[in-house]
Every structure is written in C-alpha cells, then in structure tokens.
Image (cartoon, rainbow, N blue to C red):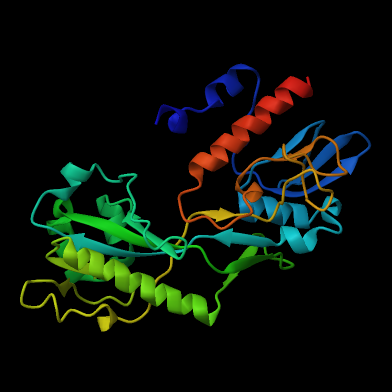
Length: 301
C-alpha cells in the first residue's frame, strides 16, 4: 500500500522541478538535438530528454500529431480497456465497516471471459448514476452503510483514437462485436446470481435506465430476473495500449520505453500495456514506470 501512495513529487520540486498548471502540449517535434513542445499559450519549451506520461489516450494523441509517429500511426491509434458493469447490493449488516471499501479478492472461475469483484463503494460512487432520481437517491443515502458495489469486468473490444481538426481533445471510440455483447449479458447474469446467493436484500443496477431496486426476498429471489432492466451502462477508467514495446523494430518503443529511431524520447505510462487485462493495471503501470526511470538514471546521466 505504501508503494502505491508514495510519490516523488516533493523530491522533484526540491531538486528544481516545476509544475505548470492549465497548460496543454499541442505538438512535439525534434529540432537538432532538442525536443520542442508547443503549448496552448503559444509558448515553447525545449528539452533534451522528453518523457510522455499523459495516459494512453493523450500520449497516443500527441504522438499521432507528431512526425515521429510516421509509419506507426496504425498501431498507436489503437487502445484497450476492460469495461465493467456494476450493481449496488444492500445487506442487513454494516457492510462498509466490514469491507473497508475495496478488497483485493475476486471471483476468477469465469476467467478469461470475465471476473467478479467489488468496486469503490463510498456514497458518491453509489449515487453517481442517479443524480436526477430522487427516490433512488433517498433510498441509497438511507442505507449507504449497508450497501456495497459489485462489478463484473470484461476484457474485450478495441478502441481507436481520432484527432479531429479544430477540436482540442482527442476522441476515443470503442467497438464491440455481437459475440462480445452476448458475453456482457452472460457476465451480468452471473453477477446477478452471485448477489442473490450472497444474501443481499435487494440490488440496484448502476445504470441511467434503472428506476427501482430489484428486491431479493425469499419469496421473490427465485423470480427475480436480471433482465428486468434495460440498458447496460459500461464503464471503465483503465485505458491502455497503443505504444507497443520491445527490441523488435516493428515496435513503437524499446523495452525501456525509448522511441525507436528517436533518441531521448520516452513513453512511460499505460500506453505501454498492450494486452487485454481483467484486473486493475495500476500496479503494473507503476512497476514499469519505476523500472524504466531507474534504467534511464543509470544509463543516461
């Protein structure tokens, strides 16, 4: 837990590092032995070593705007995510006190099709889809300590990143095949069954189309149907891929994140994870970043 929360920001500032707020890098290019960064304030920053750590969408978008991506744009444009469906389960016990929000335990018997686990369950996450539904909001607030959010997470689909002229931010689009949509339905049915068998009193699918809870009393549990609501609401905060890594020249960067054919340009974020993951990639991203920075400090200074 300590390694996941400790940062080097304080050390960075103490050693002369600077933070620029409200700043957007619009383009990068190589000028002689330096990298030039064009900013949204029409100013320019020059540096010898450039690390791109903007996250898969923004790093990839910036590379696509730059001449360095020539011949590799088809690869860089792609990204992966592991979308999830969520449902709120209400129990008679104070489940928040017992659970301490998120546990690392997951149900993996259906892997690699999907996994089942619990997600962040503090009040704001319980209420997020229902800001305009007074009855559900009232119910959730009354029983938030007795409720927990469960998810079923998938590894499917592929996304593409588009830079549209005159639009500041990149536009990511995500595509699913019909067979993958069928897997989503099956996965949510298993999540529904798990919540029923766990002893929950009712569940609330976390979708904008949900109007009321699905009660799971002894008399109604067998009759309760996961298809009682419409409109799956897929969510994901874990976007990865686009920058393939390896010593093969067909990869975008080498195994330490340095761009092939362009010295002193590095990628060091979730863009480097080019496989479909079912679990939270935070630890993997941090491990790769620390390894690559350690290699840079030992070999480039």
